[in-house]
Amino acid sequence: MADPIRAGGRQFLLSLAVSFLLLFVGFRIFYDSVIPEVAGLIVAGLVLGSLRPQLWWVSALGLCAGIVLSERVFPATPSAAHVAQYGPPKPAHFGDMLILWAFPTVGTVLGGLSRVLARALS
Picture (cartoon, rainbow, N blue to C red):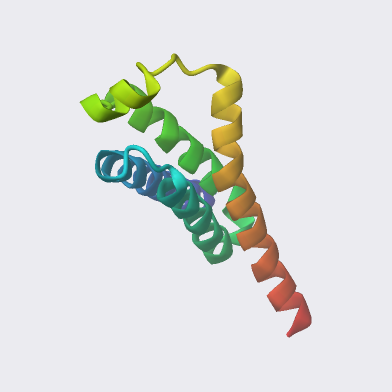
């Protein structure tokens, strides 16, 4: 029973690290455009979900935890130009976080389903 637990733990840590690094680096490069980060979360979910379809939910949890970790530990500081144009950042609400979590979750579900369907069709 220790082997599935280790595999799940490795999958969780991998997905947490991917999500954290994607947002940590991405928001410092493209602060005003979240499209690359959101697309990266979806693609990361697709890849992680297709690599281990039986652990798609662990990948989704890790990706979502990485989002929270990135936001709480190293929050992105908006540039002066961003603040001048849009005003100071507003506090995030739980509903906003749920919307953000939907992107990697959809990616992992689709990645896991694609792998399962590919096996069924072959």
